[in-house]
Image (cartoon, rainbow, N blue to C red; front, side):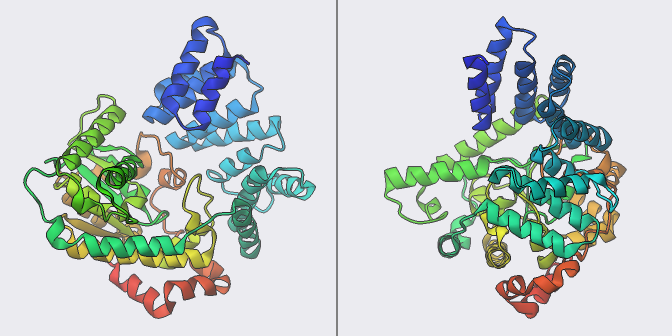
Length: 465
């Protein structure tokens, strides 16, 4: 392997996809048939743009050059899955496993787009691999989450929980409850209604942004996809930009203004022009991702933005906020069974999930009292029971003309790169409602951490649209 190719792979592992793409292009200048460089250039371009045509062409070409590469079958399967071509994705995942029977990551990603049955030989294959105990911790983690999904699919809920608990143990997360408590308290103290009131010259005047917030696994991807079916809406996915800007501003406040706090408490001391400049940078990033597509609205569905709405209001005084809510137990159980790629450390223990969820609710209640931005609450239960009525609410809130295309989110022609990529390609379905009831005997620690049944029922009643 050339040094330049290795450099590109190192950049890719560090998620510096632009630098990775540059390195792979350099390799191809001198070795135009290098299958690895072709493949990983396609993979990098997909991560950069989320536009499928060029990445798919490159990855298909690479696979023709090296048809027995398990990794290449695995990666192109992920691309097909994000595009909604589930059958082709499954076919490539299975080829990947056939070529490399101990490919635990392929089993895991297959489980995200595949419904297991009791007679499925893949379950026996995974159990055999699990029993051999030859995998390192990272691959064992992939395997047990795949087994957890398989056990859930066939109704063996106790075993599903067992494997999810083992996955959480292997993940070894570190969740700082005290830090979250301090951050939320500081935010509520400093970001008041008076401070957040619109100020002339602060922020960028545009009505393009729609921020979709809520807990992970609450239905944010479905809401985004419904909106994306409108020709005037560009769905930008989960953008990291608000979190990055928050970190940059906090660092500026620490080094230049002696700020010593935890969360967004630095916002009241920031120069006003910082907010408009940050908003312009965000809009430029969205336009680059849109790659020439015209839009009057764009969506950012980063769930963690629920904790950043104060900053968003200062940057985009014309923004709209859509808050997606789901039954607290359904949300938390779904998070617990999900192996998140990065972050979300709170999701690997049921009592931690309850703690985090309460502070998320506390934060959203604060924003509803102090934010000058419009906030639309959308209940996931109502959305799946009455898709047309709730979809019309969404389009009306966005200030757009209704189109029946919004009733067919499964037909969206965009790349979905979140954990909900399989579900969003199905017609709106009700089977995910009340999932928590399958696991109720094992949820006492979660129920207690949430505040007991009275608090849970209060949230359920309060979330109705």
